[in-house]
Length: 139
Image (cartoon, rainbow, N blue to C red; front, side, top):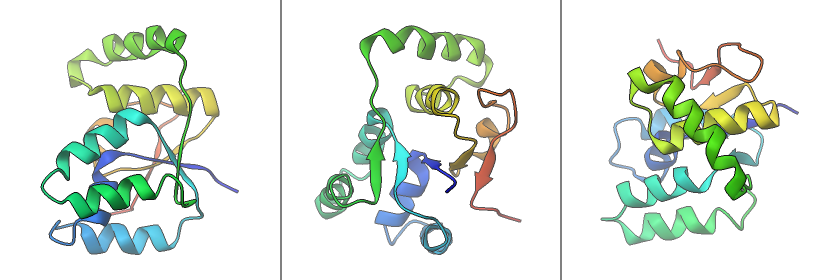
């Protein structure tokens, strides 16, 4: 089974019917096996972006206990390698969520990411120094 990391953009799009990429992300999600994997910085970022919709924030948090989304654990000692990734890619001005996902991809050997941030994730590399497989595939 292929494991997939999920970034903030698709979570927000899925939970917000007003998002211009809602249908695209929902359709892509239907083809993915649960659970998707992520981290607390992504959930925090998504909750902040969805802050005007308490129902969407509740759905997001509920998905953590419903088998849809699994949070990969991070220890405090892992802050240094995440910071090193932020330094390595500083020309992109990476967000903490992005750097954490790149770190987790390397640690967990995950090479597929569900993201709308094609610009940055086409530059970031997996732990095996390969390009990420980015979903959803768009024209």
